[in-house]
Length: 181
Length: 181
DNA sequence: CCATCCGGAGAACGCTCGTTCTCCACTTCG
DNA sequence: CGAAGTGGAGAACGAGCGTTCTCCGGATGG
Image (cartoon, rainbow over all chains, first blue to last red; front, top):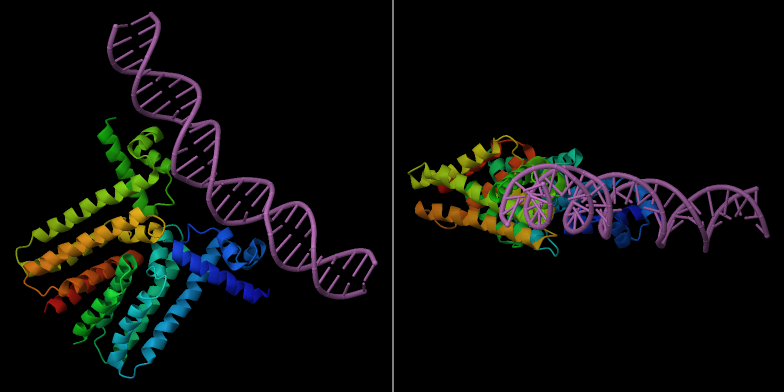
């Protein structure tokens, strides 16, 4: 098995397991079992579990923001684009195996003990907020709106994660619509 | 040491440790060391760690909602009361050792593995939402506003927890003010 | 004063898990 | 064909921790 293939398989398995059951309840042996990548190889690719966790969050961050951008870019109208963020949330919340925001969960689990994970979570949230700020600016809306929309989105992620419902996305979108005016 | 005193001391220590460092990185021996309650007694009071965790969340829930209610009730005007929720959040975010919402953190850490904890988190969030709904109704505001305010508050808790800033409370309050109109 | 009980200190047990090591089958190159 | 290297399977090691057990000092009641 090629090195890059092994790496992808390891990350695929790690992502599914870490996201679904939490990082701490998944052992390296579970990752080996789910990926088919031997322990020896796993430790060649990721010298410690924490680095596997970091790689998981990093790859997921790229995918998550990519999908958001692709959903948003389907729309032409700049105001519609802002609201499309909440459409994307709704779609995400409805996906099979959705278990809330991976970064919020990781922060709750590891934020107090791993400064690197905490930093990654902050970076991810900051990137999301910056992206929102760009959409708000492009729509000619006041910059102060960014914070409100961001909080609505974060609240929706938490609530959908805890309740398992997609409804928070619709609630957030309606609030956003009102705020946009 | 009296049984109820030992129980309080154990819970005080557990709360401080679990909230500050996460549940899984705190051992029963740490709780013993911080509380002065012997291991034997700890296990008489709480037959397993999970029950100590449940008791911690339960007692904190009562305190948290009590303090919120007391802050809100300082105001007469029903609309002012709604906004006072965000004042209370701001005050909370500024407290020493603030590390985000204990329930959101616990959900990220244990939600996938402990159904009892997950249930407690849902109950706490539902109670908070119900409380908000009461304030909204008392102020003669449309019931649909409850969801928006709830999401703003949740988003503020997450963001303040991750960033360590009190600013999200002010942002949420401003958005709430706009939505109330 | 002695027997009994209670609770504390902390050793011990068993399990999990991150990490490393051993052994071996297989390939590859001279 | 043989020597050396590669990688896989999984045993082994060591630490951490939830939980239980042992031992002992001191209080209590006859």
